[in-house]
Structure formats: structure tokens, C-alpha cells
Image 1: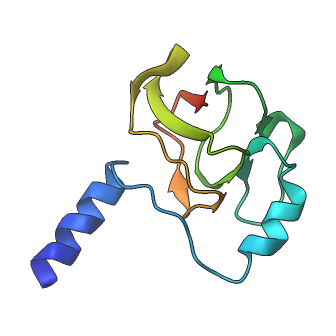
Image 2: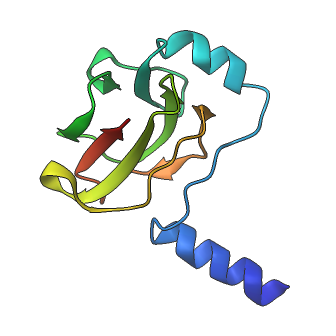
Length: 116
């Protein structure tokens, strides 16, 4: 069991795992991330207007570093991927669950792709 926890921690540190966070703050966050949008929330709870996206496709990140909470408030089963390269290159698998995801290090992430 200890080995599995170590593997999961290593994968998370490498940016491989992205799972929804199930906690009491999710409902409060959904009110600040507009319906139909994907947002990045700062650890202090702030969502800056520059970190709110509505349109499908690749969105290059500029100056987005450190840990943030991804919040998927898109409708109709739409999802998102986090990508290491600009313009949607080297992306993870799409995440489609609505809600706030676990705190994630965006330092190596250069773009986000919103998918229908």
C-alpha cells in the first residue's frame, strides 16, 4: 500500500493525475466561476477575470504559475485538458467532471484546451 501511495504522489507531482476535489468549498466556488466557463482559482479563493475561459479550443497561458484550483463549470458535458506546450500541445486526457479539482501546479502548463 505504501508503494502505491508513493507512485500516486510521484504521478501527481509529474502532472499526470487530475482529479476532482470533493470538499465543502466546491459549491461556493461554483458561484464565482460563471456557468459555461472554465476557471482557475487562486489558493486564496480569488478568480481573476483573465483566468476565466468560455470558448472551445486552445488558450495559451501567460504568467500563470504556481498552484491553482481548476474549476470546470462548463455545461453539456464539456471538458478541458491541461497542456505542457503552447497552442494545445502535449496535453493530458480530457477531464469532464463539473466542479473544483484538486490544487494543481500550473508552472509547467502553457495552455488549456476546452473541449465539447
